[in-house]
Length: 84
Image (cartoon, rainbow, N blue to C red; front, side, top):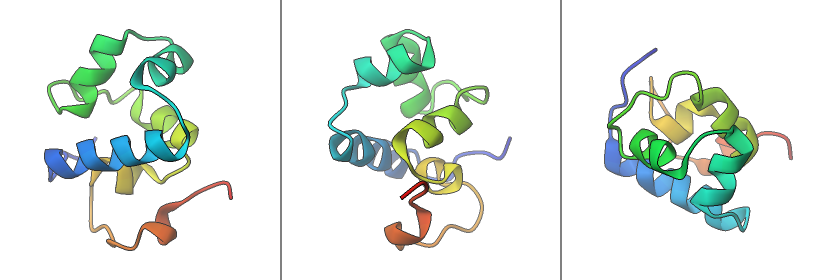
């Protein structure tokens, strides 16, 4: 699992996606089957969350690379939406 390059950007990306989906972190944690606290640790970069990253991306409708800022990621958000 590639390392997260910019943890602040990850936090911003996930918060933005949650707002767009009109979801709370609690809602997302429930859909993932994990605790809100563990989700918070993933978002803040304290835990890798490797087993949850793909599912978080699917639920929020963005590519995993964009949400978690791994690899060479284009800043253009429209290129990273999935399922629309």
